[in-house]
Structure formats: structure tokens, C-alpha cells
Length: 324
Ligand SMILES: Cc1cc2nc3c(=O)[nH]c(=O)nc-3n(C[C@H](O)[C@H](O)[C@H](O)COP(=O)(O)O)c2cc1C
Image 1 (tube, rainbow, N blue to C red):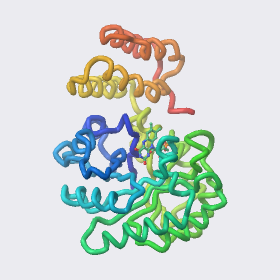
Image 2 (tube, rainbow, N blue to C red):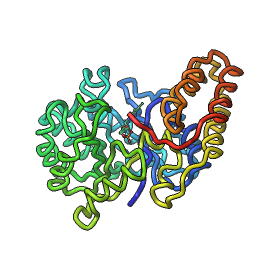
Image 3 (cartoon, rainbow, N blue to C red):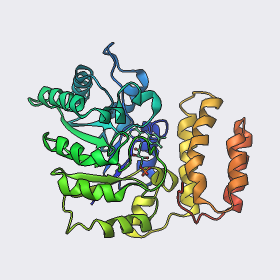
């Protein structure tokens, strides 16, 4: 089984990935948050930096493209190929309203004919020397019953891999993923599959592997960990080696990220906004930590912030996992 780090736009950019990789090696592939190619044919500075191989040294990186125009997709795919990426990932999963209303991300799952025409164009456009294309998908826009048709559709193309997050766009990121629908998808898909969704602990991983054993589902090749791994940066190690993360490791993880983000010199407010997002996940690792996390997330300057972090590490046990 391979273990992938899911892309989390706003968190798992290259600075984050470098810290994680240095402290908790062992992830097979890090997926980069999406880039959105535009008609201008210019990648934003932030996007360029994020996928620059020099900023991802020693890391196996999979860039991701979000586009609903085949021309824009193909242009970005060539840009990525020129930077040495032999495979790129297509985002058909993002549920955000601003994305979906523009018929991008999981918005593209609403119209399977239009999706087929888009896939025709991008697979044809990359057939001769373009990068291979994998897909990260949800199981439908509104209706999980269309998942079978979607899988049939994907079967018509040479996907490098299919990552399935078994929720509809409407489900956003809440509740239990629809594992029963995933089971139907696995029966239909001929592709190499990666499972994604709510794997927040070794127990959750084990129960998934018990439900979908490799002997019965040999095309499951990988598992993608997202929020659970941001909360517990050693989750993949806990799963594969049963070695629990320590409080000292979590402290080092926090301190290294803080230092790396601070070194970007984007100013205090951006820095504290980033750490605030981190604590949404990391805070779950500690018991009785609510009042400390509140103080951390309310801090308006760095000394107050760091003092609140120290207090949390001093008073709270690191015995949790990410939870919704
Ligand atoms: C804040 C946030 C940002 C995300 N950004 C992306 C993204 O850029 N590309 C993508 O394919 N998925 C993105 N996702 C979805 C995750 O990659 C993942 O599929 C989702 O969190 C479910 O996995 P998990 O339950 O293990 O977290 C994002 C999710 C969150 C919560």
C-alpha cells in the first residue's frame, strides 16, 4: 500500500511539505494544492513557487490542475511536463461554491456528457508525449446514484490512477464518507484506485482495510491521508509501524512550521492566520485543550501567540486524533 498526503489548499504548500518531509519521512507522494490555469497563460507567482522542483527537493510531488477548459488544462500540463512532471492530477473533487458555480472541480460532475467531451480532449491532447493524467474525484455532484455511470465513464480513458473521495459535492467534508457507494465503484472501475476520506487514526485505517481487503480488491493501490495527517503528522508512521507520535514531536512540528512560515516574511497577520488554520487540526491531538486553543487562535501578536502555545504544551496530554 502506498500513502499519499492529500492536498489542502492554504496549508500544505511547499513550505509545509518541506517541514513535514524532513521531520516525518515516509510519505510516498505529496499532492500539491490545485493550480488554476487562466486564459492569460500565466501561472501566478504562488503557483509557480509551489510546483518549482527546487522548492520540492527530495519530495515526490504530484501537481494538480483545476480547469474546465481543455485548452487551459493542456497548457498547464505542458508547463508541468517542462518542469519534469510525468504525471499530473485533475481535480474533479473541490466542493467549494465559488468553484462549483464556475463548473470546475466537483461542479464538472453535474454533466457527464460535458465531462466526457473534456476528457476526450485532454487525453487526446496528451496522448503523444504529454504527461499522464490521474483523476481525484467525488462520487457525484448531488446524486450518489450516478457514481456507477461516472466509473463507467472513467473506464473509457487511460487514467494513471483514480483517487476516490466517496462523498458528493453536497456532502462537502461532513459526515461519514459513503463507503457503500465506494464498494459499488470498486466493482466497476478498472483503474488503480486510491481511497480517501476520514482516515484520521490507525483504527479508522484498519477498519477500512478490513472492509476492503487487498485480496478482494487488488486494484486498491494507495490510501490518501488529509486532515488526519495535518493534525497528526506521524499518522502514516502510526499506521505502518505502530509508533505513536510524541508530544515532543508535535512541538517540533509546530515550531518548525512556525519558523518556516515566519521566514517567508509575509507579516504577522498572515503568519497568525496560517497558524490559526494549523491549530484547527493540531488542537484535536490534545485533550482538554479547548480554552488553550481558543487563546492561541485569538492571539493578535507573536509573543502572545507563542506564550499560549507554550501553555498548551505544558498542560495538555497529546492523546487524541483529528475529529469532525
Ligand atoms: C482546507 C482544505 C483544502 C483542500 N484543498 C484541496 C485541493 O487543493 N485539492 C484537492 O484535490 N483537494 C483538496 N481538499 C480535499 C482533501 O485533499 C481531501 O480530499 C479531503 O480533506 C478528504 O480527506 P480527509 O478526510 O483525509 O481529510 C481540501 C480539503 C480541505 C479541508
